[in-house]
Length: 130
Picture 1: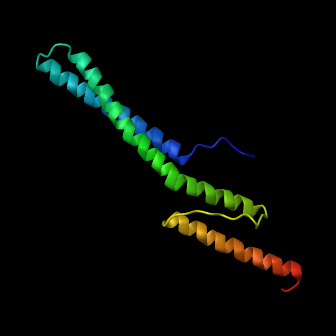
Picture 2 (picture 1 turned 180 degrees about the vertical axis):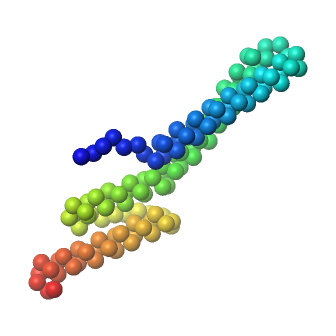
């Protein structure tokens, strides 16, 4: 039974986006007070424009970082999770192929070695060698 799950990356993204909105609103309020106390006309309009520009400038790197995290981390976790599910249901022929040089790749390689060992033992049991 599959529940409606939220990705960790989605939760982190929502937290970061919430923080960026609060931060840009804070900057916009500060800009408004600084401009209005200096007697600048259209202080509110300039504050709103600066808030929008700050928010857009922040969203671009956040989107790029989220894309990189998804590609290099979350996709590997999903691959290992899928392999765990397959092997736990008895499919010892399911191979996991994760490329890279990090801890997640090492985890996937360790899991693959374990899967191969389990398959070898099961094959020997079926053949009566053990």
